[in-house]
Length: 341
Image (cartoon, rainbow, N blue to C red):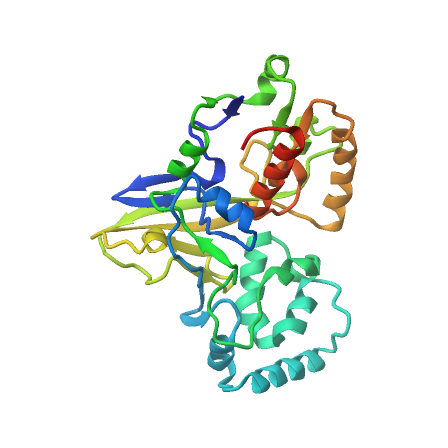
């Protein structure tokens, strides 16, 4: 078995680097969460996970709200005390907006959490993240956001959740123990050479690039990170703070030490800036709107004709995958192919 990576390190986007004794998530926050016991037992073969629970905070022009949307959020927004009051407020705003069958993200959001929360905590953040008006985005995007009429601050609400102690890089190193790895190698630049070495190729890069953009490029969103070390022990008091107003140029600030309950005298933060992907840049999120999904179907048809190559991951299958879904897919494939895991 051989693993090649065009970057100079292993781990892909879950790569972590130690800075000031803090495991920094170089390519953005990655919190492992799953309800699948098989996946959880598998990753625990390679790392011990801490008890970190994702409980982001939303900052709207200095007003702080709880994420996920829950009774803390509703109380801060409207002063309501009971779930019944919160449900009534949302129902009132849904009726006032006249939404019966949501056709886009804006309508879906208002139907789920009302106009006030949409305007303050969803609209600006989402339009920064995706670079287009919420009225032009598909409704399914917002369905991933949990809405609860309890005081539960656990964003994912998964049965198993945490961060690998010592960072993801150490976990991936254990996964790759005994496997040859070659870094700074672009598979597509020497495709024939690599293909000649293998009976099967698992390709996790952009599917449109694999086929030389023959139908044109798919749409992606990219992310730029500004990371800095601060001479303070605690910058924001939480690992993840989303900036939900449209005017703040970044979408969120990550304070990495809080992922592992760090007590270091310094801290490391990363500001995240979302942007439209350009060829040659790093593609992070597929834009699964109607036009891009139709274009992907053309590339998928080509991929299904490939006899040696299997396309996997977010970029290879052009869909948003959580880490546990990627692992489950890989484990299923390995089982079918009789590969030892």
